[in-house]
Image (tube, rainbow, N blue to C red; front, top):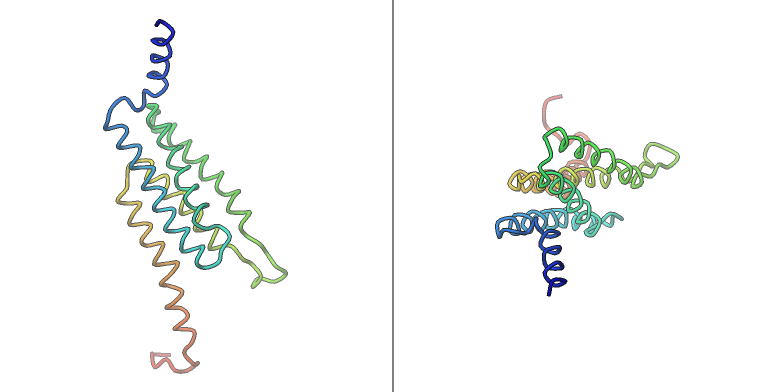
Length: 169
């Protein structure tokens, strides 16, 4: 009987971050939001045929949110949270650098937008981890507009024959 009580006490201590319904709900919602927002960005990249797609973006946003949430839940100071965010920003740079390929000429550079998208997914994960879900949603919507709508507008502009613009010269 004493053994079972010790096991239960150990499990209770190990999962103390889930001692209240509010904590379970907050943690779950933040992680789910990070996964959904990362998935939206990744879906756009995957449809565009890029290597870093849905799963990569989901993992980046959720992992980033988890790093921030874990240190914040531990009662870390603002300075400590800031250092964690700085480390995340530096770390994602290595992943982003791996997505950029350079050919022999300037036109041969590929992967910059994917790297930028992963960098933004990291920022969105930080934002969600800090409990700023509304800000993260607005940033994701703006990113989707930049990634999906802006190229359509640019293609339309580039498709016009030279000299067809009647604007001032």
